[in-house]
Image (cartoon, rainbow, N blue to C red; front, side, top):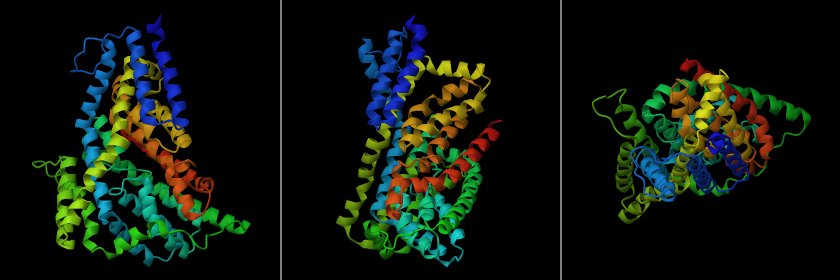
Length: 466
């Protein structure tokens, strides 16, 4: 009886987990107990082995629940988790020495020569996605743009809320190999991160981002004219840039070549990969380590202060520690949660339901994307729902006769495109405070461009999978 009811009880646990995410319970601990509950349910339902392949039982099923967590965590930290740790550490070091700020500052200078307000607005959005290859935090990138380009946008006649809407949505598509989410998507699907970027992400990203850009220009211009006619369009006279003035001043003092340092790993990876220089292939983490050591040497030659340069160099390890607590730890418990979904038969039930409904890969991807999208809008973050569900992508895709990379990408797209549509998203709240406007006023202007970009990106993914 319990064996028959097991998948449906698992659905109840998933619903309660979603409720916990919406209620802003600590996600790592929430997924930990949800994963334990699912796997315990599987044991009570008659599943005799919940351990991943290659693991050995402790001799008692109670301990096996935690042996499963150990085995899954060890596997994750040796693959996806390690790349994310190193990428996070490298990003932290680039921020510490001001190289990321310098790159943003130099990239923004050409925009100051443009005359058309909304052309500049579109260029900011496009350039923000290029910078997203280096600056992987949506909130971090938004603040860098707010400090560097927000005054320019206001000065040429763009409204504060229009500038805020574009700035908070400049990273609706994060890229491998620097993005933790993109790396997780690639490794879950068994694809090299650079292959994922070049063969899968860029063909989808380029047209989707261009569509979002055009919609942003149209929407922001329309609402600026409408609000101006109604007399409700106001710009703050004294917007706050003091909180990041130190970063801006530091970037101005740095030599121009510091802007190239964040790009070193990317250049290496674009050259030494399976698609280009086939005889010499660099791992993502290896390229990050090379870029880190090279940047320390450049910084040492520039500053000639060994104690300070070495002290700043340790930011790599501090950044890795931060990624361990914020992202990699989440991957550990998400793997446990996903294993529970499989052990209780819920994944098989999902596959069978999709087959019987005639949904196929495309329909199933859309349904799962809608679920992730709803959670993203409600919570302001798609990381928890995406990380919790993406590990089941290979099993679901195999059951439907499709490719895991297509399903995983659709899940990633929903988690990122809809972040700027949530009034409780951190990046929306931060930028709204900077622009002295309300999060709902920003969401009013992001919903059409972001939804349009999501629809195009999902449609292209479906077309490419056919």
